Image (cartoon, rainbow, N blue to C red; front, side, top):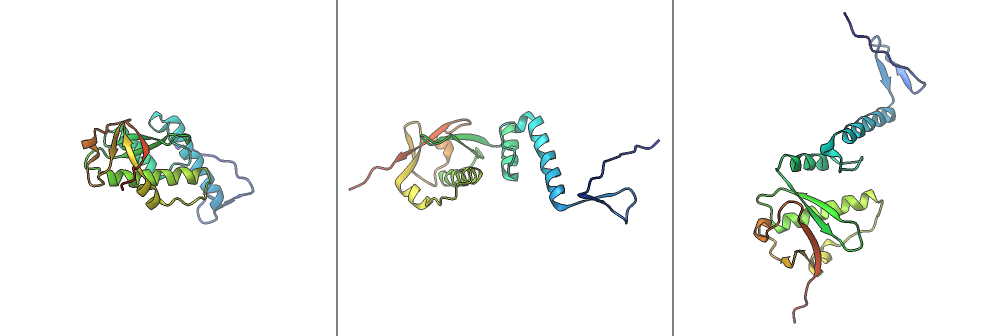
Length: 164
């Protein structure tokens, strides 16, 4: 008993002459089919329901790590801008690692919104601290656990005070 797979062949698809029954797709067509298949998987799996359709490999791995308890999600309240979710490992993560993750997630969000404005992160970190509750995360080498950060904690920016 053999399984027979049939498919319709349109103008953008050509028959491969070297292998009987094989179908050859144009590159663009294959990319579209692959993206559609990935989107269907993401939509149907409750684990990946919160990530966008154009998710990067890093985002998919991060979401999987959160589900397995190997990472935590922190939410950065950016005032008038939408809340930004940042995924970091819970153990041995320093404030500097958190700042790098914030930068990475912010740039990805801006890219998705097709914003080409350049951000001077040196300026951002010179003028603002990341804050959890009323505690400012000031020591870049300090572990985030020492500040009491846990899964689904909400962070925000606070302007640094000028020292005279």
